[in-house]
Image (tube, rainbow, N blue to C red):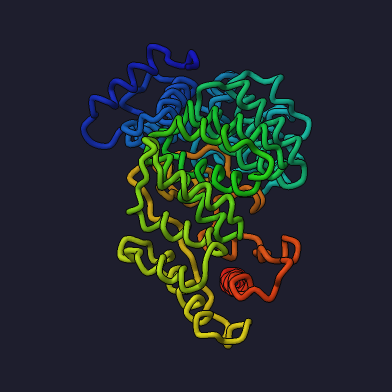
Length: 454
């Protein structure tokens, strides 16, 4: 933990924990300098990143106090370098952009400091081009570590679209400069998604393991789960599934089960039958190795992954035993659609269904009672219209491409599924009715899943 826990900062946290009656204001701590309040804010946010969610309400109050202190401070106070740096760090820790702009407009700054401030303001305003230009000559490693870590995270974020490899280096710098902090949590989380985009399976697994060890209780861990599931599906052919098992073993049993269910679902939708079967089996067996066949989600995804192992009638029989009341709305729609396709095939209709099935809008799995699976709004997009009392955010992700954003809830977010029969050599005996029926089933489900609207 950084040495930001000065006596004054620790005393302020103790005051907030004890509960100050009424609305906390900067006047309740008149002796604190801007840099002291910001150090206290960083300390609190680092605790939150490590899983201390009881500190979330305190964070809001501290942001209010810090915002008021910044707005009312004498411009001369920011001639002190550590107060000016604190202003910039506050901006990237969830501060109100309006406050930052107002304060900067009252200051007389040297050109280098003015560019630095303007680059951060442009970033908060969602102007990546301006950010790139303003911060181009600034090396995060030459800055004080606290400021440098944030700058590395900002520069890495705006580099993802055009220079993903450079972005990865900057995210690594952010982690190096600020270990054990909310900055490292955000940098690790983004690097997991970026490693998948760069098709770097080794880095993907290493960074995922580090995140799970250090930040699985973070309130933002659900975004890691999105990136982790998407990465496993995208890199399944180049990563070691035994290593994958070592990573999920660091989760608790319910988290591990939900992760495998989500992998099975994505893989089934993408037509990756082997991966879907693997993940479904892991979800059904559980950590104790005892098969639990009662989970309807595992039954559904397992049914999809084993579509070629029997006839359409066999599939109907297996799907018919699923307790649909325990499925999410999207999974019930998927079950209905697959049953409809199988029913048409058992009616001995032509190989191509008479009518195209209605597109299915598949929603995410229902949230488990655990942070890693609970859907949350990305906290990395500050809103200038929000009051400073809102939950804090690290640098915005507005410049990040769709490839590294959270998994979309519809089938259209997945690549067009290539039927398994098109990926393998033609069977020696295509006239075999079972093989023909299996192929027709796959093609029909592929058409169904691939036809969902964007």
